[in-house]
Image (tube, rainbow, N blue to C red):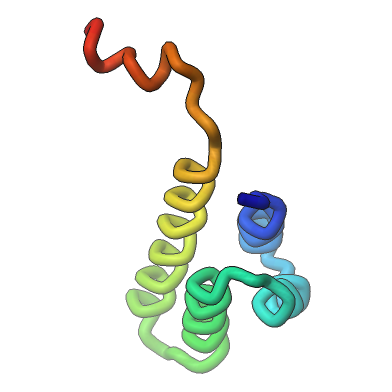
Amino acid sequence: MNTIDYDKALYYTHRSEWDNLLILMVRTQDDLLSKKIEKFLHAYNFEHDYSVIQERLTSLLRYIDHALEVSEPKTEAEQYACFYS
């Protein structure tokens, strides 16, 4: 799995580069990432309740974190570390 889109999403979110995040939303092949970005940007631009904006941002960041965690191949030592702890 290609992690470049997730890295870009994290970078653009951290730097508040909403235009680039919007372009990424359109170009990414990951439909779920696209939907999370869409919901966050919509809330950021139109929502007056900051808790909703925070919730959408948290949801986007959690998805990025999950996608990166799942896509990174684990070494054999990491896979079996829980058995030896």
